[in-house]
Image (cartoon, rainbow, N blue to C red; front, side):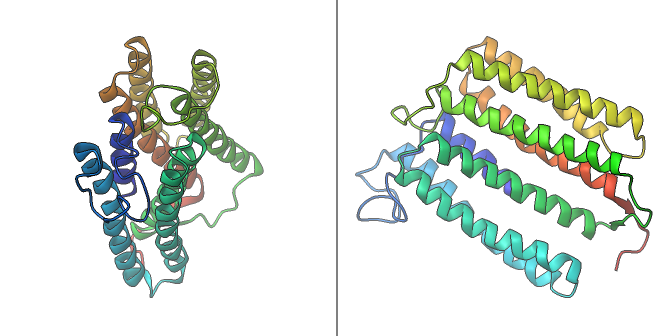
Length: 266
């Protein structure tokens, strides 16, 4: 469901609906829901994105209850629960700062951290356990480098978005960077992450890197096409979804260094 929040947040951005509800926690000065004082379509899109938070809270609370008897899951479930509340507050700050690109970027990056936590939770629930054999320092280095390069790729992507035409509202502030320059910096880290993923797939066959490689190929094609076509809304939205899938696959690859499948999880 965290990925769904990324998708709806992307819809808010590409449709220019970030200030469809111009204040927070209310949608307008007098109402918690869109009214005649707000742009009707943009208000509905932004309000829908806000309402998804309640569904996420319910899902996180349910996860917490189900995970309560397992100490290895409880902490991860608590992090999801409180992280979603943090998302709501950060979303409010984003609106109150009139969609400053730094707060918009922080909002997305927090979602990515929550996706990482959810992926770890999923690994443990599906019957993966930490390897009993101690990993080499080299394996740790490679896994951590993959995560580092991938996260820098995401940060660079948020800077590209904050410097381009889809920052959430037509009048929202932008980063004062050259779009061409930051896009190429982003591309450099994409290529570096892809090269490292290929190396992992060849050097460590037991590690689950194939999904990451496939997603990166698709994401790279979308990125190139959207750039060539002048950043059309639909492709930007798909690229944002791809970024969430990319990060999930990166974290899954990292986890597969650390965990192995067991037959009968507790």
